[in-house]
Image (cartoon, rainbow, N blue to C red; front, side, top):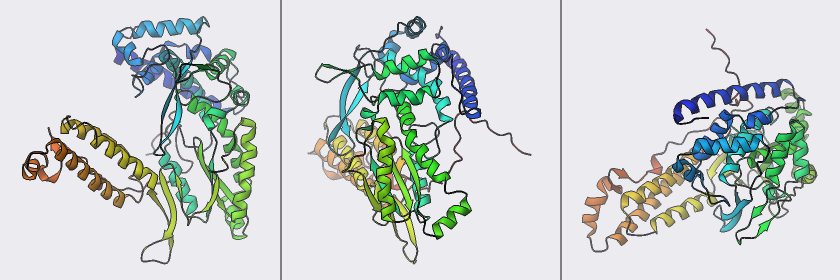
Length: 478
């Protein structure tokens, strides 16, 4: 395909892809037992490859190369994107495309000081994975259940937190806080492929998915390793495949939930003291909210372990625990706890930024303001503002005002301390006149972001009413 006019070509491709995805999703929704054939031609379709390339090119990892040393950024600069995509398409059609090794890199894991493994596929493999995802995702989204929120279109972490808040406010007081040991690394390929085959009948697509799973790893020390289990974190297809595997857990607890009957029957069941549970999952992070006793929650530990075992997954004994909502627990960066509402006799479930999340952003602010004193203040503010703005955007849907106030003060002190070190001989009065007009660090019209001015807004629980990108919009009435 000639993509010399990127805007027109991409617009046409996106419309074509969306139209086909909508049909796939509708067919999968209408017939839950349907197996899809002749999907490989869609993976090779110029429109799908172009949209896939756009996803890869605009991803923040576009400058990162795989084992072949080529990055998406380099392909872009070469001006030969059309030749690159044509070659990929020819290799796919001729069935000569073979995924290369995934390059292993180790990155910091949260604020724990530990490292986690990330797999970086070559740029060509990333494009093919993105095209595969464009084809497979609308089909499997028809099967995925409302309790799952991670790495799914139109869903976010705030939805999972809102559901926990919803059930925690309705007598679901015990929480099974579960951790799957090395989830992405341990998923059993045969069990995963069985679930993929339940929906996909095209042998060429199945072979391509399996080839990516078996691509192998180039370790950080230069040695090669086989991919016997797992879906390497970093691959575009990996989150979708992990959700396909973990939907086994969703389906088990959904069947349990359905057995409780209607809303009226669930209310009657709760009044009789009978246990009920609700799974909330975000990728491999999940909790089970329990209306009942601690013993009821503890019993679910073995139940969940039995469901995960055929998929090759195990619960971490050390990190899986049962807690009461009055004690509180951390989930997706939030601390969730029921406490007495000030000035009342009632208890309310609150969501705060967790201590670990606050420590993480404080470490980032410290690192940015502790670097070279020879850079311009405006450069430092650009970098620092991006970090602060992103963190506050995530945590603005909770009881975060006090935390934002602390972060505002802390970042101000760190920047003014950096200014003092950069200009040790300049009097404070001169520094303030030059760099702190209105008491905010400023240079080139760029001022330090103010977390305390971020409005805190409650995030509404959307329940089951979360549309997919392919859900038909009902016509307006009246």
